[in-house]
Image 1 (cartoon, helix red, strand yellow):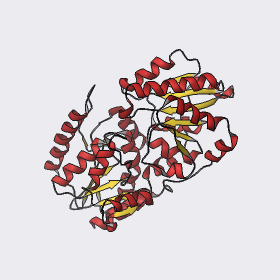
Image 2 (tube, helix red, strand yellow):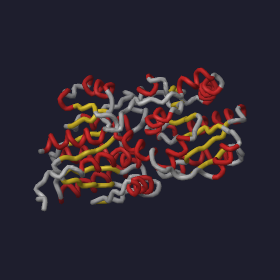
Image 3 (cartoon, rainbow, N blue to C red):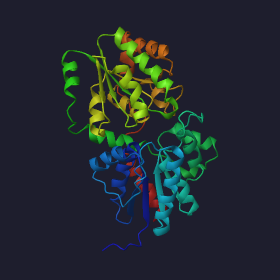
Image 4 (cartoon, rainbow, N blue to C red):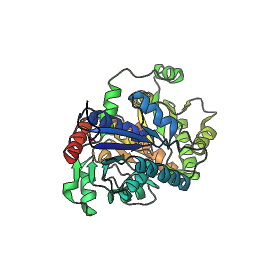
Length: 375
């Protein structure tokens, strides 16, 4: 029987993207017999987080249950701090691993540092150098970098960002993005069926415009303007059908319901399980998003991406020719979309399958680095 004197690695996660990108690493690390792996979930986004844990058959050791209706950022931070510190008082891990730029990741890293526990940061080094884009994620990930001992950078560009900020090179490991490990595994399996309305549109030869939009800095009039631009695009391109995945937050849902409830070529879907998201992505013709993860996933499926933001922390997709920045102005969004839709050479160049964010073997690399650090 293994002794519980084994070093303990504690993962902290609370949102769907964190769960997706941590799941392959957790499973890889659990194959290491001389490591003890524990999982603390904050449930910052309860339903979306849990659907991924179920998909990858992961059971948390602690659940902070912090999600509340109409929660604001200050309350989230306060509840995270109390809950995570409470766990660290009862059990002190040898290493804390966090992912990305969420409040769960930032507060988890800060709490670990205050308890003198080393921090490993998965997907380290992403930057826009705009505190308001994305907000508050850009602030949180930059602060987190200066609390971190093991930086798991997805790309050489991310590594260079960290070097430019004075992070020692021997603390940075370019490993790729474990999100690639996750979605390649799921996409290779049997994906769920599409909504019958979408199936019928595809049979009719329609082209799916897939959208995911939810960024906090876009709430209000900016999202309303995006909706007007997308509606205009649908009206002038009869071959397009909008498939939009609604975010659970009613503040983000409302502009889409208002703009498209009477549109016969718009399908508004509730928040989808991860495997279903990949099924819609595989059947999309063009993707519009202000989200992060789908910017990483779409190039592997050869799906052109219009990024509805002024800047992105994932420029590798743009440099590879798979994505373009369209900003948030409705007229510019329409112009950029029609440039892709009406120019076959432009579309075909963007629709080549690419792998700018990793090769699907990030998780075992991270597991080996952690084992060497702890053993």
